[in-house]
Length: 395
Image (cartoon, rainbow, N blue to C red):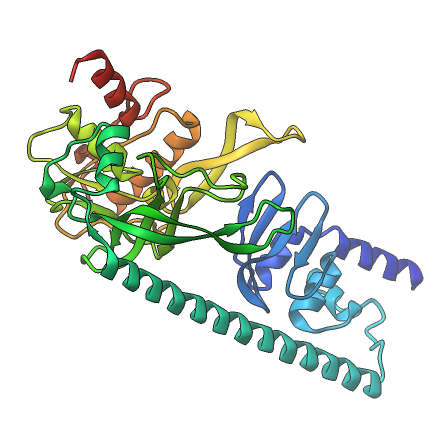
């Protein structure tokens, strides 16, 4: 009988842990060469649960981790033998129970206590998320209330003198200026504290959803003296541009959005492309805030020539959109799209995002023949091209 037990346990340990996780209700996506991540079937969350198919273990940040037996016990609140029965789909070799009634009741109470603790944590997480959402909405409302037209401001100098832009006023109604805006960031004294670092002028771009409602702002902080981006301390953690509120589902509208729209990652590149005289005369302009919001989520594939320090290929989007996780959502009247790429970032990863965006728009009803991709010169973005042509006198 001992040999039968050993074989039965070995059979369970040999099971594919990813398949077992999915049978327990886990919805996971690949993250790297051997990790799959997603919400925990018990604890919830977004990415707190992971399965490593190479090491054959799972981990849940809300509770515990371990092998395939621990995985089943975590999700079903059962003991070792009952986990084996679930994995193998067959009863224990001796068809006996390995616990008396007192043990069984103790196990049930322990499981109930754990579930109560997880419910408390989930409630706390939801409350914190709601409080954060309210704070972000309040911040956006206050910034929008204070934001003035960009004309005649330090922000206009940045746009003209540093970025080489002189756009028609109709295109920059949603590009505004705040003379004094708090910059909160991480200190550079080694403590890692999140503190008020400065009060600075800022260009504020409004982010609107597909119906036109303001859902967020992109804040580009400027040096208070020179019309250039501010250089924050601890630049590894602090960036001169911050997005507040929500960007998912939204875009920065550069004037009215018509049936034909050209979309760049950022508003400066969209206006630069327009200033260069590219595209049809009836094109309208928008910016997606960043490339991840342009594409939304997608499947992943191995990068063809970039590897991590362990020699594993970096992962990049495969062009197949996750239709349940969109980024920017097009207004309903758009029938033709030009995707404005950057060539100053890693080209394969950029192309993966661009392909995902195009495929997403096709899936949502835009004719594939009406989706084009426009690349700048190699190694540049459209603002680089504009500045170079202004310097040479070509514009």
